[in-house]
Amino acid sequence: MPVAEGAVSDLFGRPLFFSLYDWFLEHGSVYKLAFGPKAFVVVSDPIVARHILRENAFSFDKGVLADILEPIMGKGLIPADLDTWKQRRRVIAPGFHALYLEAMVKVFTDCSERTTMKFEKLLDGEHSRGGDVIELDLEAEFSSLALDIIGLGVFNYDFGSITKESPVIKAVYGTLFEAEHRSTFYIPYWKIPLARWVVPRQRKFHYDLKIINDCLDGLIRNAKDNRQEADVEKLLQRDYLNIKDASLLRFLVDMRAADVDDRQLRDDLMTMLIAGHETTAAVLTWSVFLLAQNPSKIRKAQAEIDSVLGKERPTYESIKKLEYIRLIIVEALRLYPQPPLLIRRALKADVLPGGYKGDKDGYAIPAGTDIFVSVYNLHRSPYFWDRPHDFIPERFLIQKKSEGIEGWAGFDPSRSPGALYPNEIISDFAFLPFGGGPRKCVGDQFALMESTVVLAILLQKFDVELKGSPESVELVTGATIHTKKGLWCKLKKRSYGH
Ligand code: HEM
Image (cartoon, rainbow, N blue to C red; front, side, top):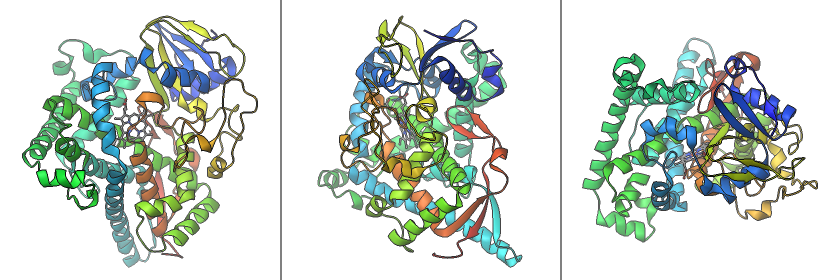
């Protein structure tokens, strides 16, 4: 297997996934990256990714990622061992059924409107001073909005973070910050006995975790105390839209899928809180970043919004007609996948299949091999995408053929009939925004619809520009790709349309 010989400094000067991309072009789609005592196999090929994530999925676990996340998410779905995962996935995945998603669209809309009302108020203030533009860090606003939505959607808790700060919100951000620190820090010093008492940031981390856990425990108690047979009846009769609390927690409790110990349920909720918050906020951030550099695409999006929605709120049905907005979201996910790398560890010796070019026999890997499936490299591979670094939402409308690449079936929408958004099945694992195989994201449709609704409402009401140059928006990465100092934008009420 080719070995990338990067200096360790390459790993710190800039986001890791940039260096992994350069080495992919130099060494091919499967290479070994060795630094110090650690080594990773970096995969940038759809056939090999399909093998690891789907065909031989149960021969791999989450490795380094589980080590990092376990103290936060416990036995939640992302880091869970296989036995726990099998039990919990079976009961959680059905919670994201179509009627739940339909009920959630109302939550997405209500929360987005709370955000746009805040912007309108700021603009009114600006008007009274004779101006018509406000400057805002939209990344921070999306983060608050996504937190409010995930709180309501998963456990019917209104963080209200658009308008206020609270100890729980601070604790959520503190925990995310620590998760990120751990995912980029070289030596897991937090595992050293006493570190949690001695190192100030570790003390703070455990204090934050306790605040969130107490909050979640209270919500679980409350949901169990208020379990209502009538609601279960309604659930069974599929009268979902009339249930006051449509949250996932309510579903799990009412359907008795929550009859596990409270610790497991809390781990499940914590996992979804973390997994569904910054990821969605990041997709919205990069969608706006890309759009702001392409005013003609903003106008095209606004024309679609005007014709589909006019001045109305988005609904479950209208999302189906907002095709261009949906494509903007998936194109942003292609260019800025969250997370940019999927992490696995081989549980037993395996042979990775040959990739799309060269190395047809593949590579044997021993048990314990740590693997990065670089979604960033796959999504920007010059072998599968025309103008891979350009923002072209329309590209998903053009069916690509496999171009004779052995073992890769190419793009084919008929493989996933009725799918609203392009996915890994249509692209035969060249496009993996939510992973693939059994451990694929459970919240993918939730997140996609949420992003579509938020973006549609924002562009329905405002014109958006970047405050500075695109180059000044520097990237940093931990679990997700985000900006160094925020996505500072200028917002103006729309001069036409709404
Ligand atoms: C797993 C991405 C939103 C819950 C994953 C994975 C990816 C992903 C790539 C697979 C990880 C792996 O294979 O190692 C995203 C993105 C989102 C998003 C890009 C937003 C745009 C959400 C939301 C929720 C959620 C909203 C919950 C409400 C989960 C869970 C898993 C997961 C529970 C673990 C699934 C399992 O192992 O069975 N997500 N996610 N995600 N995601 Fe998401």
